[in-house]
Amino acid sequence: MTILAAIFILSGVFFMTVSCLGLIRLPDFYSRTHAVGKSETLGAILLLIGLALHNGFVLGSLKLLIILVFVAIANPTATHAICRAALRSGLQLWTRSKPGS
Amino acid sequence: MREERRTSEPQKASQRYGYRRLISVAFQFALLFGIWLIFSGRFGLKYLVMGLICVSLVTFLTNDLLYYRARPGGKAESGVLVEFMSWWRLLLYVPWLFLAIVKANLQVAYLVLHPRMPIDPVFLQFRTGLRKRLSQVTLANSITLTPGTVSVNLEEGRYTVHALVPRSGQDLVEGRMQNKVAEIFLDEQAEPPQVRFAHSLEELEP
Image 1 (cartoon, chains in turn red, blue):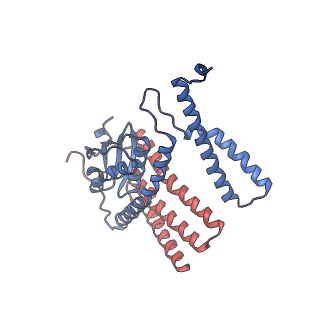
Image 2 (cartoon, each protein chain N blue to C red):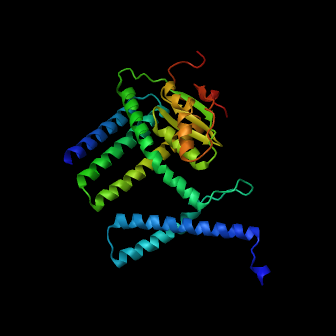
Image 3 (cartoon, each protein chain N blue to C red):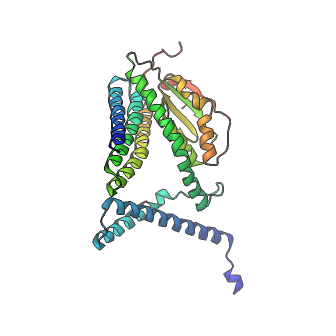
């Protein structure tokens, strides 16, 4: 059980790291939302599953699972809200190829 | 006497509305109280009463946000049972979505960790054939969580999506995800949507 928990937690940490790297490396706001909105959601989910497994079958694990459901719903919603605000305020997106070429 | 007892059509409709509203209040109350019990973990009388008061207050304040009533003149709204059934169907959708999320993350990880970062961001725009609000919102949420795409805007069934690489819009162009959502929420199966690619805000439809 401990090994399984460790696997979950480590992969969670991996995706969290990817999310932070993406936040630094990606060129503009919209692409950064990909890194934060997706990798962080999965990272948090994996971390919480790992912690719940490590905890065993107690009330604390149930709380962790509820937090997990909340994160899974709230994170994409917040990502979408920020993205929509950016679009409405007219933020231009970064492109590799010039428009029209 | 009998003439008075017989209820007219509008009265029946309002009775039905009240009944459904009551069920939605009871459902929300039970859900919130269950969450309270789990989070507090104490079952003394004091804590239960505090929970009851808080849960009642929250239900009173937020129930009309959660209970969606069809606009007058619109199609007949679906009954509470049908709505609950589609909520249960949401559970069928979760395993498929989870797989898609894992794939999405591996792709993002690949793009981010690649030394040259082979990305070519683009906006996609399309109209969906989905009719129900729940399925439209679910589609938007799935777009955000699946490979390379984040849904930016949804107005009257028209989506604006940001994609890291144009080919990640493939699922959308072929309408695969839309059909999956339609299947689960018993919505209309529609043609694959016409997708527009836009490289700047000016190319977007207003």
